[in-house]
Amino acid sequence: MTDVPAKFRDPKTGAVRLDALLGSYAELEKKLGQMIAVPGDDADDEARQRFHSALGVPDSPDGYEISFDDERFAADPQVNARLHQAGLTPAQVQLVYDLAAEYVGPAVERAGAEFEASAQGDRLREHFGGAERWRDVSRQLRQWGEARLPPDVLHALCCTEDGVHALHTMMRNGEPGLGRGTNQAGPASEADLTAMMRDPRYWKTKDPAFVEQVTQGFRRLYPE
Image (cartoon, rainbow, N blue to C red; front, side):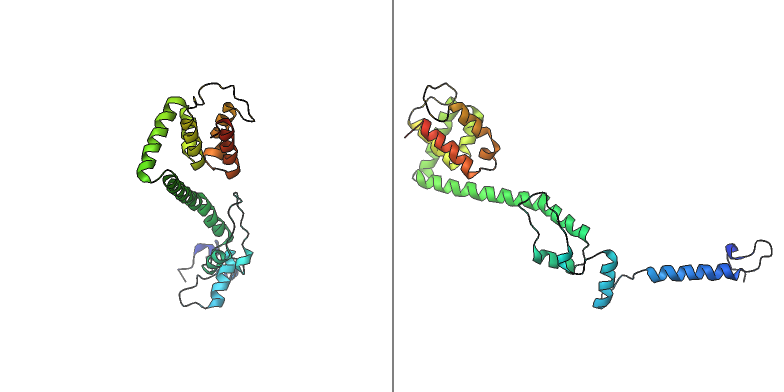
């Protein structure tokens, strides 16, 4: 038995130490018993269940506990069922939702904003009598606004349908613009409206209630 490793031999006599050999074998058996074989394509449901349980996959899709930083997102039971069927662990499922919120959410928001912008453009073309007439009016509005309004205010007004109508009313009434002072009394001043249009609720998220406040402010300052 010359192929027996030195650690299993007595250092003085060179005899095989059966106690060390048997102890090592018992430890190896214990480790092998704790190992879970990766199920192959022909594995049965029981073998797959044992493997998933060893990885930490819950017994059902309801066992996933998913957190969201954005309250607009929520877990979907059907998606969870698919992820559970694929054998994803809770950490992996959380990563799937995190990636969806990080990449898919902004893409959906951009698509929604583009759709709303297109719808507003259609309504403006219809209001002003067709595409050709709207091109003329929009060019006049831009030229008038560039001559009388701060660039950021003009941009904010042009970003919404209500803002375009307010700008058109100002141009039609021959108002001097927001760059100059006014003595007109009212619940809102030009400075107030300018500050409100710089608010992200107006130009970015286009909060309906906030946009309506700005629109009504312009109508009070520049009645038709």
